[in-house]
Length: 253
Length: 193
Image (cartoon, rainbow over all chains, first blue to last red; front, side, top):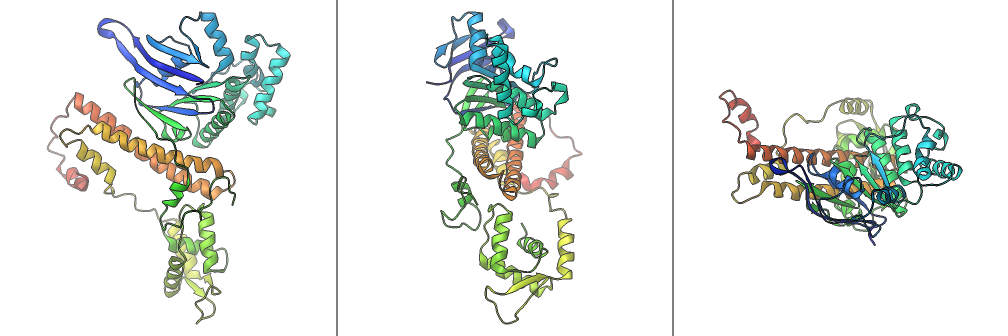
């Protein structure tokens, strides 16, 4: 079962002459453990796709399923509950609450979902430790660096048993070394079974994904083929050594 | 890339054998650029001829022949490290030419041509990123070499993105004829047209 499935999803804003077709018949499914990047220029519909996938907005037509459950016909409250339990969001601007510590920010969605404060706090601290931020748990967001703030936001997105991560330019505000760290952490979450959709115009971020989907004018126009593995690339290096003589990932030096 | 200067850099750490130079070269560059041993010895011979390295054992050309850098060699290396590579002249880039041609060939959708190249480049970047993800923490040389490749490919994709947008805008609003002041610039970029 797909962690996320979009079937023929379209979204229209406005009416009459001012109508804008933001999405036109999008089909997309993301399996558990997969990271899909959605690439496209400004105005191609990337962010709309993400807000609809996260049930923050309803499609004009088509169907969204999270963990096999169709969102259409769900009440506002039911959608909010599904979001808290199953969907983690990571935004470019981190969106941490300034008056709460790192641990409180991370445990908040669990408490909102009815978990006891103590259990939520323990889960929050465990999630921070998992991202190498154990010693930052009691700090407030303005006492953290940009890279640390985004790692707190990732901890908040993966805390609990959430199966779907939605990220909108998750490292857009960071330098390239911190951006790489963010993508590495998101990809590690995927290897543990989380499904992720990362929306970006940055090819370096997109290249962390298992599959890259190209969006133009609200349509999926193309996507990458499954990766053939690194040996093809090193085999193509100038001077062409025989296959098998290269050090491959996982073999060690 | 200059094998000559890479070998001088390795010899600046101390005397080494040919085989050892090849192994160290490959290890330091994350094995991204394999080097054959013949290339190493030919380069060493030229460096010796130019007085930039010297060897022990005059007649012996075998693998036991050691090389060391000379004072002239050290000076050459210091100068090379600080000489900017030739990035000033626009290269006759095959991809640039294909996109320029595609924009003019009747019945060709230039945006589709651009997407074919964009997808291919992103797929290449995915492969490099997988290598980096698996190995970069333990191999700094590899991480640096892969980063360089990723930034280079990223720059090409950015050019494609900007060409895509520029062509789209030009189709909606065709550019006016160029004013007369431009012929000199046009001649200079003529190689691309």
